[in-house]
Amino acid sequence: MNSELPSSLLRWFKTHARELPWRGTRDPYAIWLSEVILQQTRIQQGWAYWERFMNRWPTVEKLADASEDEVLREWQGLGYYSRARNLHQAARQIVEMGGFPTTYEGIRSLKGVGDYTAAAIGSIAFSLPVAAVDGNVYRVLARYFGIDTPINSSEGKKEFAALAQSLLPHDVPSAFNQAMMDFGAMQCTPRSPHCTECPLAESCVAWREHRVEELPVKLRKMKVRERYLTYYYIRCNGDVAIHQRGGGDIWQGLWEPLLVESQSEGMAGDCGIDFSTGVLTLLQQRVKHVLTHRILWADFYLWETVSRPMLPPDYIWIRESDIDEYAIPRLVELLIEHLEKYR
Image (cartoon, rainbow, N blue to C red):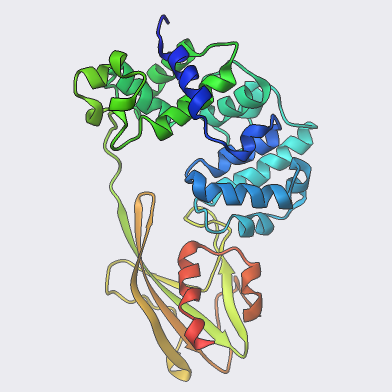
């Protein structure tokens, strides 16, 4: 495609590229790790996690040798824990392959790696001529070319992927992909983009037609579901009861205290325990916790008892002082923060 966009972006990138630690390497492991961490995480937060992972597991072989619990514990606080599980499984895939794959198809075959991540890794680590299309790229292309095809539709995904690929300079795919990412993150931002200072303003359709705020177009998302949770933190002679969440729901593989979920607000669920035998304290009520397509409302209780109650068989008792060794959801972290005055 005959467009001034690639050359203008590359010139802009030479001056404005973000200085990020994973940009100083062609190590595919370090680049892959950064891409997975930053999938749904701001750079400011993800940077520290990337450094911690690299310090603890500096090679993919060392990450593959870790246990899933260790990886989840190091990931704690980042959310979307399926990313951590996929990262760990993919590390073991890579070791079984005998090394990091060097083709787009090989990288794409890794657990949890989609089109964008495979293109980003492939272009940056191996100079593969594949365009990486993420939210930033959708926004830049939609505004610059005035495209109103919804970016989260099948048609839109194909259209934008083809457009990005047609613009990609095959001699500098890494620089172009990173320039597009940085330009969308720093210049052509979702809200209040810096249009009056934009080097592309004169040729930008959205700017010329006063449609910057309208683009890109997205289809309406699915309805958000509300869930109502009650946590009972059971303390007995220095021990606490926890269990590991199973698959098919949020927080797979993470640990939590006794949970009772209700169907509606104010409707108490029955956990089959007689709390009159100990001291039950309400720590916090109606804590709001937002996830993708879900809003959680949680009540937190501390129950202190001198005899262990009968619990479902998947619960285990651990020393309370050891709870930091277990990966827990952010919501449970909030519960534990409220326990400080009850130590």
